[in-house]
Length: 319
Image (tube, rainbow, N blue to C red; front, top):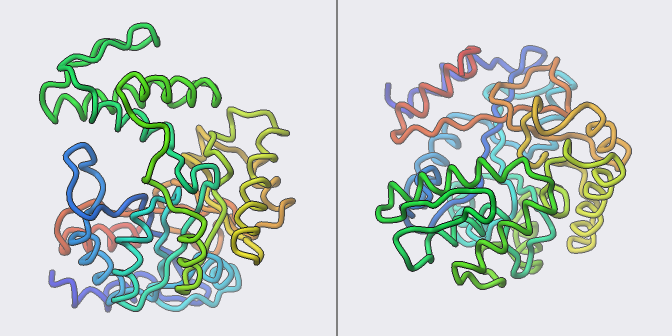
């Protein structure tokens, strides 16, 4: 199937109006060049053809506007959103120019704690594995194992194993453990991985939508209700202060509706003044979808044809 000929298929599968369906694409990073330790992240060349395919075949809308149209039964045919989580600097330096070149809008969900030199706990681990000078990394004192780092394949395996074991630790313990491991490997506490406040403002000035993603990216379900609400509202207030305007859309950290959040967190978002929120459930939204539980789905296929086919399967109810 030629990607440029997919639009009639998407229009038929997603007819708009009261039968509208919303495909929300999710990204985290867009790399200037391929990184052997981040095989799942697209580089600029791959992101360019993804965006070109999306722009030619979908009606791309900001997330908040799309959810509003979906709930009112007013979506256009083949409606879609492009979203980014966390606030990585390459969203601004690599992804934004590509989006602008194709005349597309996107929504960027920002975890405010990491702006201007911060680094997320998972990146502490990735950079520790990247920089550790020896062929074996002994982390038994952290309740982990010793990891063979002799090949990129082994390094990727070590990263996946460590992240999996730390992911659901208590939030503070997870952050402290990851940072100590990074320091052990010689990783500087300051980082250039994330946007600064000026880049957040410039992203908004470029016509993009900005949304909340908590302050320090905890798994909300692991927190007390008071702490979860504080994370939600602090991130919102800090982002609104940077932008000098209201922020009313949100993406849940991690975002698995079964493991990472619950209906009480949706209630907190409503109380805080948000109008829509994105999960990481892999599905397509319809008029019956809760606006605070919007699914997202990106086919990670390596060719435009396969990417387009998987988008069609998703719209047909078979992601």
